[in-house]
Length: 483
Image (cartoon, rainbow, N blue to C red; front, side):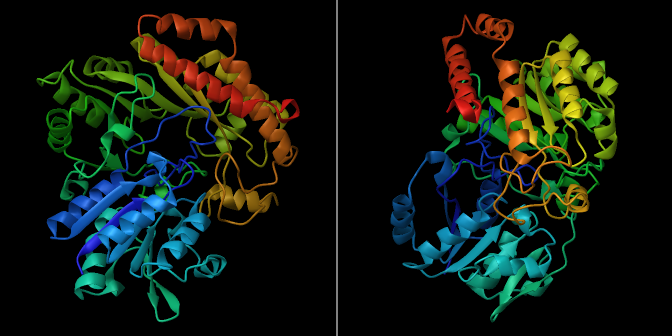
């Protein structure tokens, strides 16, 4: 009993490795799937403990249930562990029921949806095929779970952040975030991952995700990060990060990276040290990377280092063009801060990806118009616009409850299909139409399209990527009355 199967089940293309975002890329205007590092880390931990491991990302491969059944019958796992999201949890549990119909084993389900959940909410889920629910970082508990279930070693009662079945009910252990040292983990088992599935959006080249840190000291009311990963930022040793970059480059031929952190630039001196390590290495000029950032803190000296080290895009969560909304979501920034950050990034010569949100429960149509005006003033290279999604456990969830706009339960929703009836003044349908119009008005400007195609003229692969994303954007955001 030493076989563990790690998987993303077939279905919608979801950012399952991103506990705080869980983005539904099937509905997104832009964006690219990130590598399944959560499974990769689990595989590496289990391999070190002597388990036989099978890993497959069925959703990104666009594989079918028949592929799953064939693999399960061949591998005969003693444990299956899958990564779920708020969007997919109901479907994923039904998936496990289907698997259990022809193969019985221990089933573990990991997802932010289970973090410190009120146990009464479990009654809304069909858990008959599940042995354990994990709401914390699975890579730090998978070894203990496998040892208990497959080798009869240890106790589940001491494992952080899980619900485990005890006869016919589930027992909830304490959920404590921010306990784990990231340097204790082995590198993700990329030899088991199909690295060619995870690509840089513009060039289509393989792009590895490297986790540099976890946690965020900010208190944005819509974000799961402080709840799941804590407000204390845990950072990996710079040398440890660089060794993983080397492994990706020399062993797997990967030269593009997403440096994943809840906010990579939150500690500018750490971010600068990572850049310095690259700049002073043989890989300087050989690799490129993208990072996420807040509008504050962000200074010219760090942006200069990022550009020199190979940063090809910075993604910033600007969120809103309304100072009132920025204050109420506890973003810690102002509209002027957003404009300053965008100007500095432009001056550094780094392409900018802007994230924005509309549909907070107090918002009016004029506040949303302020956000569209900010988008035009910043003029990012790319944008994504989300409707505010109140995840259970966040301050936004409580605000939506206060405004009586919660709708549709806690499970099965995301920022493209949120569980709200709209805002105090706008219906969900009106928000959806406003979002579509803002996206189309931004991306279909003749000046924008000409600029993008001109920049890609010398690189046919990039030009084709722009065309492909453009067609997808238009197809997904035409107003309903035109369909």
